[in-house]
Amino acid sequence: MNMEVPLMKNRIALVTGGSRGIGAATAIQLGEHGARVAVNYYRNAMAAQEVVETIEKAGGKAIAVQADVAKQEEVEQMVAYVRETLGPIDTLVLNAPASSSNPTSSIPAHEQLQAILAPFTGSRWDILESFVRGQLQAAYYPSQAVLPDMIKQQRGSIIFVSATHARRANAGGIAVAVSIAKASVETMMQHMAEELGPSGIRVNTVGGGMILTDLNAGAPQEMKDQMARKTPLRRNGRPEDMASAIIYLASNQASFITGAYLTVDGGNFII
Image (cartoon, rainbow, N blue to C red; front, side, top):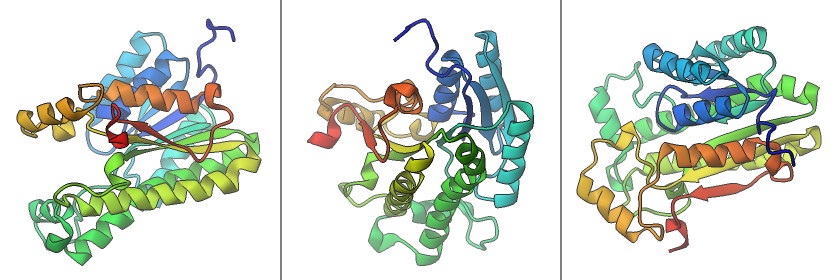
């Protein structure tokens, strides 16, 4: 292998939820490895533009694209714009969750969030159903939108960003809705891998453990330290750790890997 050739040279990637955390780290690494990158965002245009500027300052090419990935029409318009601007997408990173609150609901947003993070006995069916549906839509619509080009080219890579708690119960039963939603998408990914393999399209999942992002920045430091102490590698994860795993699966280094689940949690899943 020629190590001087960037892993993602001539690839065109779309990262949903690419304006912060794992998505931002992934978009930046994709750019560093030679891909042209579309950075999707929902609300924070400034953060997305900062990611684009970081990629461009390093010599890469990137654009910011707004869309609610749980809405089919917006996703189709986004993919069409990326195709016209950068070219047909051959790498899709499904990192964006659906909105955590349902704007059509009469239930206040903070109560919806509490119900999403609640254990089973504290859950509400209407909110759980809406959340799981939204998570599936956030993976389904982008996948459907990019597949025609991937099938035409007979190559492509789709990677879903999941979490290890979707594969085993959490102590205390917290965030049942999140676990159910992630597990549902993981199952969809497995079926896609089997169906799309003959078209040269690989579909994989990366499952993260305790990854330090802005989403858990408000969690007690004592809890983070406790997680680090019980992790075999004795630290919490960084967005860059997840991004590196995603780059590997997206690249030709993983050309014979599909339907796989790669755990990035410092070894916690083996305990």
